Amino acid sequence: MENTKEMRSWLDDMNLGHPLVIAGPCSAETEAQVLRIANELKDTDVNYYRAGIWKPRTRPGNFEGVGALGLKWLQKVKAETGLKTATEVANRAHVELALEHDVDLLWIGARSTVSPFIVQEIADALEGTDKVVLIKNPVNPDLSLWLGAVERLHTANIKKLGVIHRGFSSYERTKYRNIPEWQLAIDLQTRFPDLPIINDPSHITGKRDMIFDVSQTALDLNFDGLMIETHHDPDNAWSDAAQQVTPARLVQIMKDLKIRKETDSEAEYTRKLSNLRAQIDILDHQLIETLGKRMKVSDGIGQLKKQKNVAVLQSNRWNQILGAMILEGETKGLSEEFVLKMFKAIHQESINHQEKIINA
Image 1 (cartoon, rainbow, N blue to C red):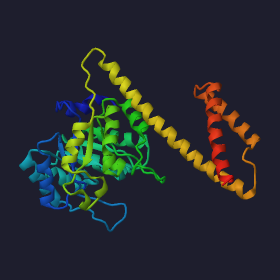
Image 2: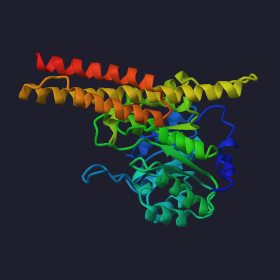
Image 3: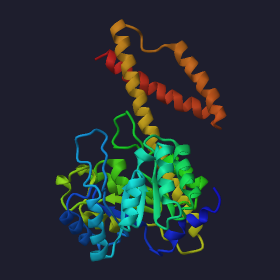
Image 4: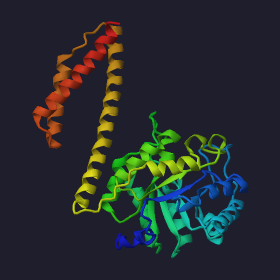
């Protein structure tokens, strides 16, 4: 992809002085609800007012959006508050209706990004548009699929592009609704540093009390902005109630976030150091999570050994593991001494877990 610098001109031209903020309800529910939230956001750092118009849910039977009627409410938002508007589109008909109602920013959702057919249909419908178009990451962690969607839109002569990082689905139960997989977003930034990247902490966390921490991590990693779902009465929202915050809470989050703005000669060094440290923090958390999972497997082995009255220490198995890990560590630039110390510590913790089970 060439001329990627032009992709962020729309963002640079805004001269914000703070991260881009896209906020509003998960779903447009009623005209009164849409206008009330918009009026509470109009004198804040919010740059685009978002509202879901079409809301296909994972399973049918839940609220699936008010449809095109909600676009008229977004027109009223713009007229009353001056806020620019944003909504998700999933097919040509959505695009045509959104353009007809002068929506300023359109995004392609995670379920659409997984399908090159859908992305191409949307790209064809938007060809040459001067609207801002953002692409959410696909449901599963696939960088090529994500970049492929960007390339299809870029090929359609759409200049104002960007991506939204909303996390990835997993069968594992974690503290996140969608696992961030920060490294994948970092890889995207590395390959296309001029492509604006917006973080969506609402969908990553699924819980309003985690939104601040994820937002801060995103800013530490030099993300360009945030998309946060906001509702005047979150607990009674018609969709995704648990992950929405009130406008007042959104304002407080924006005040509390630390935004790195260095102006001295060491600015570039400080920015890069902050970014690298944030990456290390993420990897350290992943290490702890992985070790925790490993010990749960050790607990299962301990239960089996207890049932069969087998000794905890199996020397042959341990020597095989150690030899294999030393060789693999060498391929990753890790010294034999370090791998030995690390796996001896892990092995000892595993023995402690199993002994506790066997002797219980």
